[in-house]
Amino acid sequence: MLGDAMGHVVLPGIVIAFVLAGSTAAWVMLAGAFGAALFSAMLVEFFRRVARIEGSAALGSVFTAMFALGVLLLEQSGVARTSFDVHHILFGNIETAIWPAATGLSSLFDPVALTSLPPQLGRLTFGLVVVALAVVVLFKELRVVSFDPDFARTIGISPQLIGALVVSLAALAAVVSLSAVGVILLVAMMVCPAATARMLTDDLKTQVWLSLLFALASGVFGYAIAVLLPLAFGYEISFGAAGTIAVVAGLFQVAAMLFGAKRGLPKTA
Image (cartoon, rainbow, N blue to C red; front, side, top):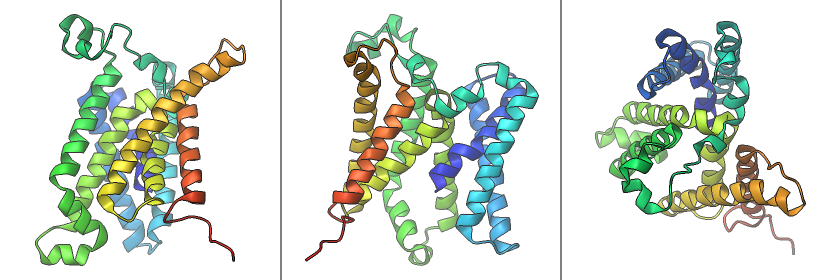
């Protein structure tokens, strides 16, 4: 739910930051996304504590309203007539992230090839490194707070601080991914691989590794299907890669829901 919310609430923050700064620099987009995420978190807490609205309902209301505000700002500010159009925000543009100059892993160390590296790949790599390091370094704290926040307090771990960190990491993942993959695929990748892995194991570390595996498989198979399946039937136009990857991720989750070791259909006598 948090991943779904972050994929939506960061939009108005990104648009406002772009309008004010006139730049798509990573730090500008990240500042706008973080500001929107912080404001949304405070708004959710206000609804929960003052209006006494159930947490999930408050979160759902806030992220839909924030996303609607973002779309409205896109249209009214004129940003929609730039590269920040609604279509790319929703569906992304993975095809522009292809690195034509790359000839293999050696290209990662080739200064000439790196000059043509699509900027989306650089942002995605930065987000991957930051999130991965945070999870590895703070895995114990994240696990304790997730399962028993009261016990975490007794051993000196602040659930509020860890919660703020998780929101920040989700906002970071959203802002570095949005221009490349769009909201739909962003939410699919935040939700489906982890939910799929949860159907297969009760071990947290195993679930994390399975999540990575299903995310990778969704990307590889989804992109291959988007490009190759239409060609196999004689069509020259491929499917949208982002939508196809999201569909494959959803199919993995459906399969796990039906046949997973931990959440399979009840057996009949």
